[in-house]
Image (cartoon, rainbow, N blue to C red):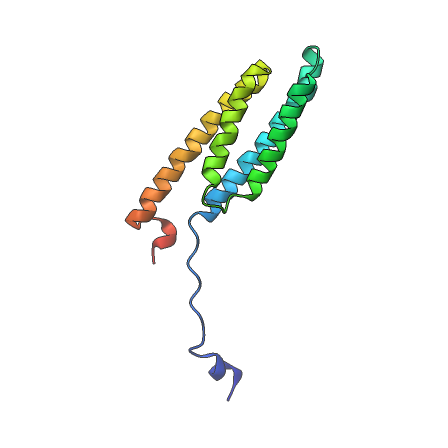
Length: 135
């Protein structure tokens, strides 16, 4: 039997694409961008003022580790709650320095937009109107 004849009929159908894969990538990329922005706050504070306090530095360090871990946890079912919790912690940084709070508000708005997009994708997925569902 030729190789062509052996391969006939055994071709497996391609696995359906995961509509959330790209969305998880956007979430992870947003968290990494947030890490960069948060870490860039340290030299800016040193330039414009007395520099960050040890408490502020510790807070930034813990927040940075949380953001980096969050970027790797996007496949988890609770990842979006984790992401929003990180944003609340960013806004709570107002207590330590107003710049962290401002960054928190900006990124909270970004995450509000991401959550809106997530709701739209979920609705279209339920309706079967996503491009990846067309057949």
